[in-house]
Length: 437
Ligand SMILES: Cc1ncc(COP(=O)(O)O)c(C=O)c1O
Image (cartoon, rainbow, N blue to C red):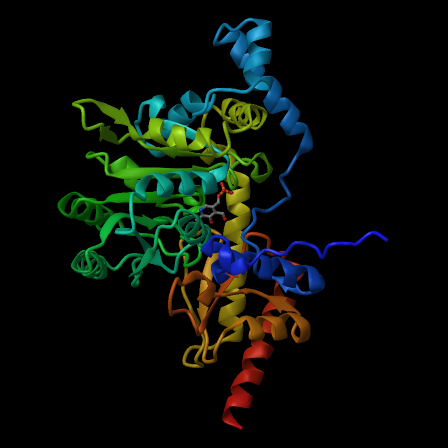
């Protein structure tokens, strides 16, 4: 007789603390609800519109990039093949194209050596946070509500996140000063402030120009870095505001970029611009980007050169400008936002207890409602009212957002938007009735 040993079991409580943190599963919840209620109209996904996805473009871009290697960079057939198919440079192979693109589109002038090409912006966040965390006294400040990817990356890097209020302009500078002072009074070291300055995820807020300047002045005065995450800046409306990195004369800003919204999410290509100098303690300096490259070499080795080639080809095809390349899809997002804002105005008259912000563009807006918004209400909304959205409480590291929900407009279908908003209006009306009775 053979004895079968019971399967070995591990204890969640003995694995990395992040694995038991609810922040790590909030995205799963949304996916799960979308799968369980496929008929529901979704204002939840923060994904780009798919109308313009084109498989043929992948081949075309790849060819364009390889052609660029041969003709403009003078590589032999064999060297070009190696560049795209072999393991590659840790900091990436399209860093020069990205640096040139940032100069064309964003007025950001940085040496190509300060660009690290990453597996999406998400990897970039992790690399930076990992590098900034020396010990238990280190913390990162984040404008709250905060993109969940930052919260998750900070958990993985064992770097506590301290929230800073957003206020009506996307950043409450007085609260930032207070939080820095409070952290220092506790013996902590605030290393950086994370924020999304243009049409933020999740709030839709954009920082006015003067506030951008004041933030940079404060970063110099109080000696912290600014982690600027700007995946939606191309969709931030007609009036263009300079990114923090474009205004940064003191190398205070680490700029995180993504091609997921402006080129192809499936390529999983993003980047970090880290032109900060790091003193090595022996009289020399090293570029922060090179140190991030060291972390990357032990995380993902290098970003797929095939994926980089596709993005590189897309940049070349559009003369290095993704603003121009995205004009059509940007118009689609503007139309969707206008449809949703108009639909809200028709259903929720002023003074009725439901209000919302009117972002300059982007994917997201926030609705404030007179009832508690939680996962149970989302489940009810999906199952009975046929509409899905995101509870804002998911974006607060601590308390906050209990009466707010995020609506995403990026994948709104004009044919179903009214049905979705009708469902939302019915849900909120039933909640108000239930509260009164
Ligand atoms: C603010 C923000 N940063 C970063 C990302 C992730 O970018 P990537 O897909 O390049 O990892 C997203 C995606 O939704 C986002 O909203």
